Image (cartoon, rainbow, N blue to C red; front, side, top):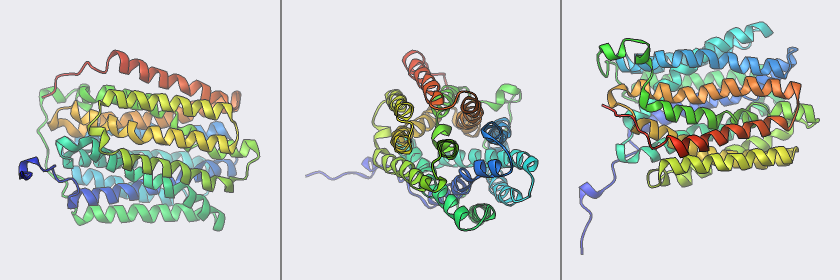
Length: 396
């Protein structure tokens, strides 16, 4: 009879710092997802239309995209903990600033909110990359991405419920409190994030190219293409309901179903992401997303949208964590902050570009055109997996 040696045991994943990181991640995404279905309604209430909803979402994404590589470099070459703290405090400030009664000011607040979100995401993703054991990166990424899934399960429905029971002020106050709690955990030092540079700036990292990590560019591109469709299932359901004469309150079931599918799938599949080929996993995700978009286009009702959203949530459950793990695999360890900033650009660009494009398409053409057009980005994912996925840049 043989016994397993200590060397055979899997590396510990759920350390105290990782659990603290997961708590902050959940609170930050809860803050954001509480506001996700409420902001389009706030814009419409103040006299805007679907196009302006897209512009407001893009106004959040533009500074988040521009500043993300900057924060990634600061994480590597300055102070990881402080960057993360600035992000969480910024989220809280933005929550309360939305209460200022002006449609024009929403755009201004969105810019500041986007900068804070860039710092928060870069700090959090880099924390996961540094805390995850190398042989369990896929599982760690899956668990990390469970936090947005849990927030998706709770946040949008809670935001709409609070809005229905109070006023527009209610969801923003609750979101602000969630961000304050996240900042308190970061301040407590439980995450044990570095406060000194991971490396000193070198000639190779001083130019513009130093803000991006080459190894993370392909995962970032695939994340961008895959996630471009997500705003149709996350941002625009309230607009779809309003244009279709469906009571907004009916969406309180839609969001939990989407979030529940995401959470359950991500939990059940978390270990498989280290055992299966990452490229094939991403290809399957793109295929399922095409099916989801086809259902949404063919069945333009709330039940149809709910089925489509569940399918897309299932695909996102394993596609995004796999791409995040691939970005870590392919990147230089000393530049993991730049790598996570580069990778997470894909998600943020997808939200901004997708929201802006689909808002115009909805206003000019209407449904189901955006679902049909969005399937094209998933076909591009399949094309890149088939042609360039195996080409891997050398990393230090």
